Image (cartoon, rainbow, N blue to C red):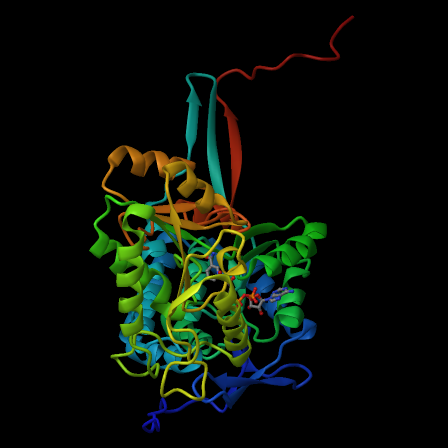
Length: 501
Ligand code: NAD
């Protein structure tokens, strides 16, 4: 089948540059790298390839804005106003943002639009939170008053992945800026396009020059230089667990503050008493939305034996109807994977799965998509617990289904991987829902629900899925020092030394 002609976004930049100290600049050595369109895999633009010299310049600008500029010294209400203006601008450009994001990343346009709105909401949320922020104060009557003096830390290094680029950048930028830090952002090299819009948005909203800096480039060059920079005391990283381990080691000599949001292989556990219709709808969405390129994807579905055959049959039939299409098409449910390298990795797992489980849907390219990074929603049933497709993060539209007989076995299967990001439990038994949540090794649990986040709750994983938590007050804590100030009231109390005879 021939594909119809695709509309391209208007005004695609011929060149994506860094943004340092309020100016768009090229790399010091002039180096660039190709950025590919995931539908054709052709380069549609080039981006500046930052290295240590560019990171040095960005950190110097951020450092100066922190030590000499107004931003860290402004009242929370003043910073909050700027953040609300940022949210307003993002909201007003949601269609353009979604168009560029979808084009660059291959995400379906409707889902990219949802992510753009979430990005605006992140700014609004932290704009409100810093104004409402209270800090601890403790009084010992008549003797002592102790209070917390909360202070921004300095230059925050923010390193982000390609799966929902703009939204994940906002998730770090909003709390880092709200608390008065200055930042250097290193976005993912596969998807630099939407990040290039931040500079204009921030300028328009009135963020002082030097507070936000952006360096494009490869992880092992620009990212590495940021992690190892002595003037960057904080690194907030989202990406693969293996990259997180490397960053942890590279940051160790500097004793940096680290927040790590890493990979996942999250289980959805479906008990026989669950509302099967809802469980199927939610677990289809849970692994195939965002092209399956979702850290919290429920990519392992554990189903109680009594409903297993029915579940697999209905699930496979519905998965086969999930609509793969061009990212720009509003009817598309699964678009194109971000990059040919990632596509090759996902396809390797699809082939591997054919030997490890029973293929019941998908299993390769969808019909009519002979080129580009398209993968048919793929379902494997009867997947044993030692299978690679059960153990390893695939990060694509591929799911493993496994039966269980008892609650204890379900728990053992759920916990039997190195990751621990999310878990989804489907049951109408109240006791079981809560006791299972207590025992499952996951940073976040959803009961009879998809991944619906409340921005006030902690976000983060256990085991190989992460270190530390962001979300709500946890983000404020990560981006600030809490200095304890102790004040004597009345007479000073202390043992007296050196006054003996
Ligand atoms: P990745 O680890 O390859 O890259 C992430 C970022 O790190 C990129 O900007 C990259 O350039 C940079 N980087 C790579 N090597 C580096 C180094 N040595 N030093 C410093 N920076 C370096 O991850 P990815 O492929 O872009 O993203 C997919 C991964 O992200 C998946 O594992 C997914 O689960 C995870 N993820 C996790 C969450 C979460 O919140 N837990 C959210 C989204 C994605």
